[in-house]
Image 1 (cartoon, rainbow, N blue to C red):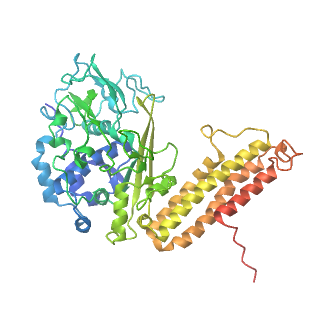
Image 2 (tube, one colour):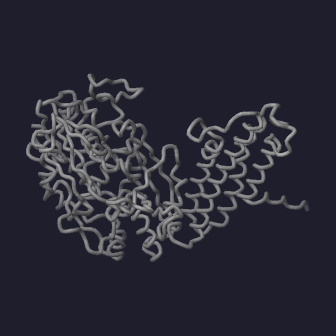
Image 3 (cartoon, rainbow, N blue to C red):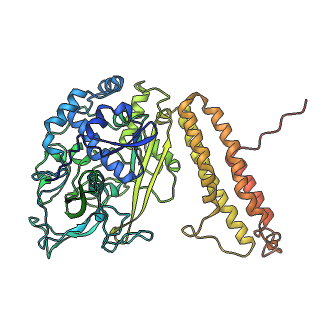
Length: 536
């Protein structure tokens, strides 16, 4: 009989003193102040472990803070109550074994299909070959499945609950909705429908604290994590609203059974090569009032049975800092009706009331997935992490105004660079570059600006009093970078662009007018070039 106790066996990926380590749930939480935070070598798995295990264990064991005083008391303690966390884990010892015969963690014991077929464990890992999903640069095929250690299998299991692809799933014996050996109409995992935004601090303890929602009424009566619920332990699934925060965080979007097999060469003496994966619970209605890790966009004219708000998803290739306006919409929606994630709005209130310091080392992790082919495959994983001055979350702060101004100027610079590229192409007789094809000049400029924006955000996080000087310095750096991107294009323009394709037309596109327009745009966006000091 295989056994892997998630409480104490090493499997949770964390960073400690800059190095990746794996620890059990107990050590991760009792020594949370000693770890730098999550290890992000696989961001989908890291977020899944955090949401499905670490955060709900703390909430269920300690209860959510009822008010700001309780939240501040937790922060001032500097670490979690070891007796309560340890007592909780020991009290649920039979719930955290990955291979338990009666109730394996996040699985259904004895789950099988009507023909007893299993699938390679690569089904849980989108980057590996499985079925019709054959990644271009994968060295493996479905006939050569990987052998996952129990630790790796546990992480892949939780990631599947969060991000699994849609489409047809194997029908499980005991599922009343199975038809012809399969179940259709399965949506993606719940996080695949969001743009996850997770605030992070200087340690794992602080990161968990920043993700603890203040709940004046406490948990709902029926709310509990999946390991304390009997519903998720059967092949039958339901379509329903979540009972509460813990139910949502540990949502069992699939019914899964890992199949361990002995392997004398493995460190644990056992590996996982095969898995049974079937349909799981489907979210009904809106989770806007519960979901803590997403920004939301108001639906102007919702249709019948459509929720009033829709989760904002990340865009491929778009750096997180370009969405600063949405991240800072903590007091009122943006012009597009977007509001910040509830946890950032909560942090803004805590800062406004002096519960957190102005120089809190806040970072924001953004993770999202782009699906393709009817959401049956994962085409792209978007992940980014930026420093964010906590003072910027507070309305009417100088840092907030600076950060929003920088984001706005960067976007306008991008458009100005695109216009320059379009005008030069027109001067040479070419057409505009389509927005969804090739790299435009503005994209190159955004790439060049990104390190400068990160430095500015990190600097303001440490020295929020330097907002005015930071904005002046940004203008100088942004102008220099804009010309570094534009000058090679202007210098490399063909001879025909000097007079343009229609020299007889006074306002036809030509090299000189394109450069003048770009120079004027820079002055409009960043202000005129400062005059050089007079010689003494």
